[in-house]
Image 1: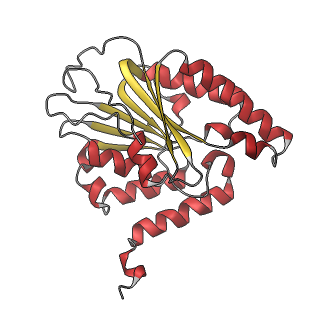
Image 2: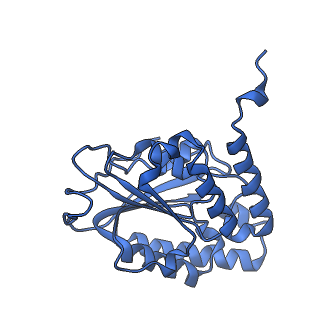
Image 3: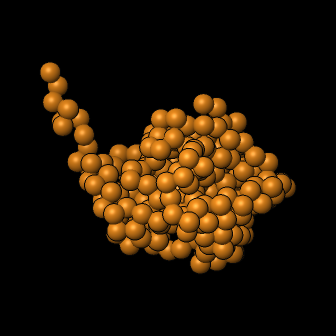
Length: 242
């Protein structure tokens, strides 16, 4: 019988351990006890075009230990660029090290930038075709969520898209949560609903995640303008299917 331990990547196992440790430090901003599942990662990256004649500028927010980063790296085209933003310094340092050893990340390492930063502090002059968000919105206050949403909209090109997740069963969780958590979740949900109203929306359920989640795709009105530095054309948004 094959030794199961031999099938586990040491770096990937270390990433799960680090993620769990950071969740123990601050579950509110880490948001879960495990990184996004492969199925959720695929759903959140469906909007990335596989095109040789269209270069995309992609932003990942809340990169963590790279669960979504690897899914993005597996999809990006030869001229696409990826900027990964992670506020937690330990997670950002881990992800920088992973670029040199993880096959998916190493294959496009020269086009990946890891930044230890907060999305709210990103310059509005930076513009992206696709933004993949791995932040735990349900754990944020209404004001925090609104600030993040405005920052995301500010750096998204016309015609571009944002993907993010929300966990299923929020109402059930509320029954076992304190009043403060319930207030945060409801306020954040209200802010997100108002934000989504600006966009064309698609949503799919992903049951194979801990916990199960919705994957949202929000497409901004307008037509993307050609960027002479990264290529021409519009980001392609494919419908998300389960």
